[in-house]
Amino acid sequence: MRFEPRRLPGLLARGALPVAAAVAVQSAGNLGFHATVGRLLDADAYGALGTVLAAMLMLGVPLGAVQTAASALVAEHGLSRASARRTLRLVALWSLGPALVVLACAPLLRDYFHLAGLAEAVQLAPYLIIAAVVAAARGLLLGARRTGAVAVTYLVATAVRLALGLALTVTFGVSGALAATVAAEVAALLVAARPLRRPAGAGTPGALRLGAVAHAGIAVTGLFLFSTVDLLLARHHLRDGGSGAYIAAATVAKTVLALPAAVMAAVFPRLLAGWRQPGRARVLAAGALAVAGPALLGAAVIIAVPAPVLRVLYGDGYADAGGLVRALVSVAALTSLVTVLTYAALARRARTLAVPWLGAGLEVALIETWHSSATQIALCSAAALAPTLLLMLALEARVWARPVTPLGAAGAEPTPRAAIAA
Image (tube, rainbow, N blue to C red; front, side, top):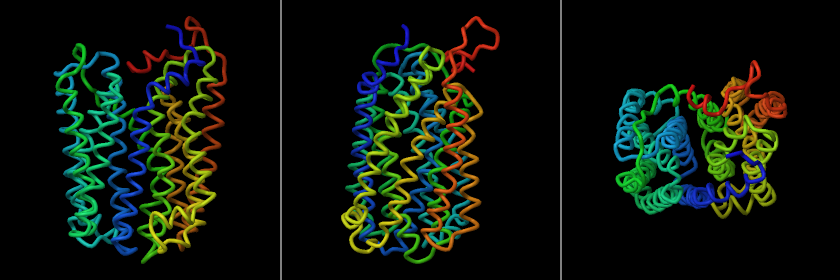
């Protein structure tokens, strides 16, 4: 069937709406979780918690590559109970080695991030394994177009995290809040396992390959490093309440990226299909609007009233971080454009997808040089964003604006099916 760019909004509405709505609820729940524990813990302890949670996300985000590869596997071969079990078992085995490395490095992580105890770093290891299997399970369901089931996994995880977060934080502090996060992932896995035990339809044999996961991982990991490394460096360089203020402002800012990330899951297959079709520039523009539009709108609201947002979420302790929120929210909103362009590069298997890695390296270099205050670190993050976004626009948008090369012509671009097979 011929791909029609004008059908993109309707396709996105049907495919992304359940997951996008669930992620919106999850984002609100995440803010509620941070607001709750932020009031229960002092600023320094909250800074430690926010840093470990960011590290959990950093360990889990490369697993977005697993989700993408699992989804592509099901789209090609269909979903069967045997293939689902095989995929989940493989992913669990693959994640065991990295989890053991994280466990062995727990003392180093405790010292580098100034954590109160070893238990706070140790919990990263089981989280990695569980998050890997959850990512694979969601990918299998997305490939089978079971978006409703995926949405339920997010909703249940949010409810469990909020319910346990308060009780465990009161009793165990930072370790309790982290345990609630791990328990939420376990709950999501249990929910995802039920439809995978009784998949609709029949699938043919297919195997999840490390090569496919690794290629998607380059893009996904680079994007996450680019958008999150400032949180880790802020905790390392800032002391007392400084890191807590930065984590609070950054948490509000990163929430702006949550809903666009859910929409991106629906946009990417359209980019892959549209790359070899006439009107691909319109496909990229529509995808950019669908992903970056919610981010820019959310950012505009927060930038207009940062002080009330901070007061509602964290009380009066972070009331003076309004300027920091404005800066970090602006960076987060524009980063959504980098996300679209990176996935556009992934759709055509181009080397451009490595640009966010260069941006993250620039960000690290700038922050390591200038880090005397939270504002200075935020400005370094913005300074790294500008050339990264401009370079992605110059390289990627220019290619998508070219006319489509006929399939029979020499030097024609690879088709989407050939790109997936590669």
